[in-house]
Image (cartoon, rainbow, N blue to C red; front, side):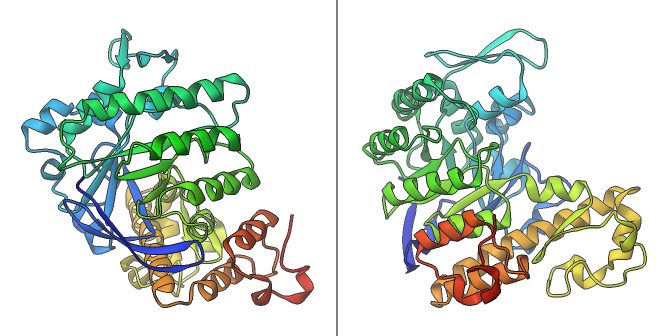
Length: 400
């Protein structure tokens, strides 16, 4: 095992921890930007270090296609290839097979899909996924799981969950670098608490370095989303990191952290930047709107990032529709916002003021006190009283 996880402080279920990986000492809760092919679109690795990025997520499927895992291995691994000295995490490739490609077929052997290069059938097995990730060399590698859409119902969910358990043993057997890379298992089971419970119990018996909660952030209702997170974090080991996959909305990260999750990843901050949208404490700011054309204020007056210290909304408005620099500046700001949110979560738990931080966050995002009902329910389970920090007229602050 090449990971050490030390919980430094708690507030009820929320925890701030130090996670030591082969390439970096990380502080959780943490957000991981997604660098599909070893790059975050529009940002250099030195800029990512500058804004405090701790782990970059790489996509195994894309890296295996181009430049190929064999070439990455030949050139000294992905860290050296992309000139990144901090931590890396690679996914298994299974999600891309199912979500991006037509005619993907999952059997007990693995995932059969059409090659995007020549259209021929290709097979990704648990063994092949781990071999590719061993060559790429990330600090954390993910087991191949049987991926189904969150909104799927019926026997397919149960089939996928049991197959995910069978595949974890094949992944463990195939893993050639356990002293340098940490294999995380992925909890599946859809929105069914019984299936989730079976999966958590089976996977934790394997005593792996960390565990992910998969199969969420795919269109399910928010009430189901937080309940699955709450159930899984309560059942997963206290001394191992818990990673909620595909979560990138700031509100979701605050809620999941309150429920005891530690790690998150999503393309949302950079993807929304390419559409001209900035993340701000109040929610989002659409820089393409005409109202921005003569606005000389920074994106967020409270933000200390290079973009907010240097450029006006009007300048970025002029760029976003015509120049790639606009989306690059917004990507820089949005990732800074997410990484600062991670630091604020960590520090507020360490300093014993996590409830105050949550209340302040919610006040800014919902100034009228119309906090969604699902957030109120989740915070109640997390043991955080948000009623005290919202207007009394807002019916205990809970909206629809």
